[in-house]
Length: 252
Image (tube, rainbow, N blue to C red):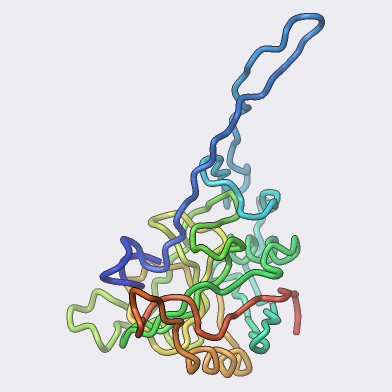
């Protein structure tokens, strides 16, 4: 996310920060000539409407291919996904009409087991921001799938009643949305809204959390945030009850 997830700590709320990789040049030998250095072939976005774009400077935290990108991206109906966590099930309903490219990417990552055995690394407990953030296999908050894609931003969120300026919108309890590090930087990290939260409408909403999932979120939130030597009473950090997505499966 961007500055609103941790207003005094990080530059972007629920941000998916990029790691930097050193890409070594390939050695290519032709005939009997000595091997010579050649740059890697440029990686192009996928050709469909979603244009999933490789991020070689931000390599995948876990190997995964680019998602399919058909010209007719499915944009109707819903899909059920269950996050089987060590703290209980979190059922999700993904909305293709709201965010077809996001749903397509999320299902792709789940199908390739990108989310299996990954931690939910961040819990927030600000008065106007209560979310659990997941989706980074590295558990650092910096990992992603090695590609990015454009925002599919909500246009119908009501104003947040806690924001007199009218700038922030209500991300209601049970909302499922993408974390990002700025415009059009969606990857694999997502957040689950445990309690009504006020955010600028800069985060793609692509589904909802079911009642059982909200009960799981409530248990996690009740456990609090893990203390650190620097902050014995944090309101933003790793959950005190460690949360791991053991398996992400399509269906119930």
